[in-house]
Image (cartoon, rainbow over all chains, first blue to last red; front, side, top):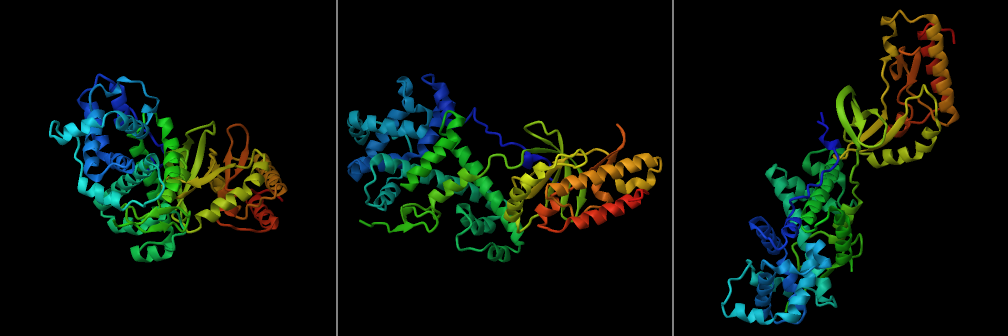
Length: 246
Length: 219
């Protein structure tokens, strides 16, 4: 029997998400807010790398510039200036790169000389390998940044979902059902999946519905980590949808 | 330099790089799915189970928003025809809304729980089922006649709105006597929506005649 949990409204726990924590700390950064910011940077460094590369920076300089940029972001007084883009970490980071590249390229040289410890772990080989696979299209650095941001976010969400299913002994179910996360007409029939999993077709449909809801909730949790106001979550999803659709 | 081969999503037409990301699903469709999911698919809080049959479990529940008070929330087992049921609900909703009779228990809502199970929310009606009539011999003939009159009026009101019950029997009638005899017909519209049944009003009239005879009242 359901215990009522499936009927309860979805609670959006928001007060302690990473970006709101960073903004709340302001200049009076503390250990928690510093760790929150560092972990956000660790998650989303590749869009920054791709942005700088798309600006025309050579591969051998891009890693240094990326590290220099994050060193600047992680400085305690970085939030001194009021910035209208601060409400969303993505917009803040994108605006900050532009500002950084126009003013502070020399910091990269300092890093390159070994004057500063790299602030985040950056897998340059993987980054450059991924960048070399980017389509050679007309995307601006900003649009490439947003698109890569959206893809990293979705990869994180799917990885979390898969991890949860594998932990529950449902790894095969996840692998067979994940195609339904993009809709029903994927060429895979519910009946075929039901047969493979030893379930009824109705039970598979319920499982798909549950997976989609789990996906949405996880996506919202991940986005919530990067915005300061829960009212921005749906707008952020729409923004990212536009970014990957262009 | 290796250049990735672009892939076009067959569903939305979005073009994406095939090799630049480990993501093997269309990102545009993934985000669209998330946007289309309802936030609160089932706005009721379960309080206690009050019944069970082969098709599902009925709970006493309370609406989380609005002023509907208590509802009888029937949660159906997994089904293959969820979309068809929801479609039939939209079809019958206007006709059901036209029935304004105190002896018709209102069907309030049909939807999906967070798990994707169909639910049917109906007005919760306190009282005892008419099947228990035999153990309640204290009900006088005047009250029985009044009950028969109410049931007849209610069925006429439903038929006037274009709605048939098709499964009317004493188990679908609730009786209360707190403020005088009062009968309420349960499940009106449910068979049409959940089972996709159809039939003529004659079926209800025959069933009503049987119930009235069981009441000991001449039809």
